[in-house]
Length: 442
Ligand code: MN
Image (cartoon, rainbow, N blue to C red):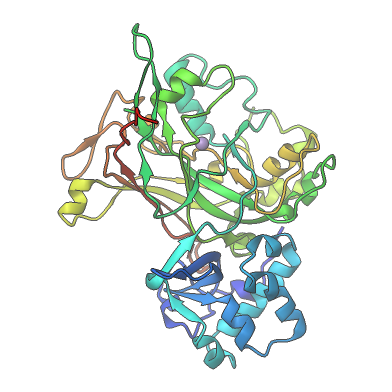
């Protein structure tokens, strides 16, 4: 478990003055990693750290600073644009680099002149997927989501009997992972309504899912499970994740083997990886309601009970095509908190590897949809509209059951606590494009 140190001091200020703006998601206490290049260029992707409204280019930092050999050695994989290589080195290297960058970016740092020339405005940067993701697993830790969705199908018995014992998940697909800003095309699929035979057509019930994505740092050998006390050491950092879902395709295909084409056409990630170290001040106890079964011993340990959860406020925002044309900003549809997940990230790591399955640096674990306990806190339209039966009305009078072409969905996330500097994740956004016409001449 990451501990607090002087990099979390809320009084720290940066010579990058935009980072000191209270509204900035990237103050000096955050320092998330991403992969970028100048927009419009065909340069190779570079690893950068977000600070205020700027990106610190770590390739230039490695070239232009007179840092010690140990510091430069830690920067090497990053200077070569290999975030995975750095992720594999674990929490010690990550914390050491964080300490170095925190010192170098502080007001009064002797490195200000050298590092000023290593900044690129975020407004001029194009972002790529932050790392190579070799495997992607999506879990189902949002108990309020599982209950609300279960109720639509089984009003008397919404939660299946395994839910409170097994962190439920399925293996997802990596090739269709996209970074924020990539539009997504409405998928076709087999859709079955009422008594008619199924038809192949564009999805009419396209939805988003508000999730947190965890990226693995050091992996484990095949056949060597990760025990709970070590599980946090295998986490590198978190992103926001939108698990786009075609509900009509899902309803027809999901039994007996689970989601397939209803989920694998696109998954959008936010571009900045917020490290476990930046999140350390926002840890929370892992608690279950009285009367719920305790986790089995292989999914339990004292640290997890004390600090296993993370308090992250999560939000979904929507801007329709009509709103965009009239210059109206996006509206917030809901808010929930990652603290309410039924399983912690450490439990997901321990469970995933408990049979000897090997995790590798850059692997992605999705949290499942994070809905809150209250009415109106559904993390998908499926929940907010009760399965499409009760449309939501937007401030401009438009209504939605599911997404329309031209809709932009934006996920946002931030951590705040009294006495601490607020940190954010940056937007995870994408716009729905009309379904492609099917070619009959191939
Ligand atoms: Mn999902």
